Amino acid sequence: MRRDSRIAATPRTCRSRKIFVDGLGAGSETKRRAKAQQILSTMLGALTFARAMSDADASDAFLSQVRSQVLRELKEPTKQ
Image (tube, rainbow, N blue to C red; front, side):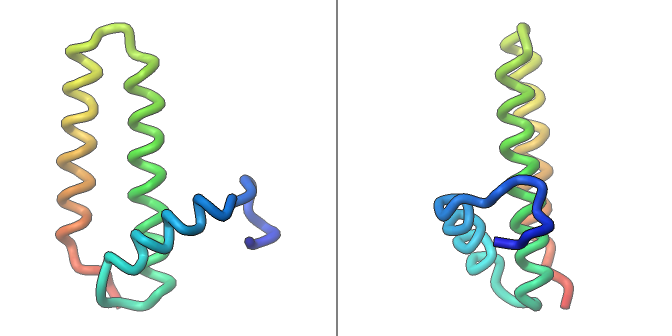
């Protein structure tokens, strides 16, 4: 765990991030780790935000947009 992190990473969080990093394939580990953190943060933030929305249809539409964006990001090759 890095000392400059604002939030302490738990072993479970580290394992989840490692799964994403390993699944992103080619590219440097630093770039893959950054991409994995971005994807995980986007997904967790979207879920938190969607749960706070009072309109179920708007919540579903929002989650659908985020899902599409994350899938597009996964298809993009990780830069070296």
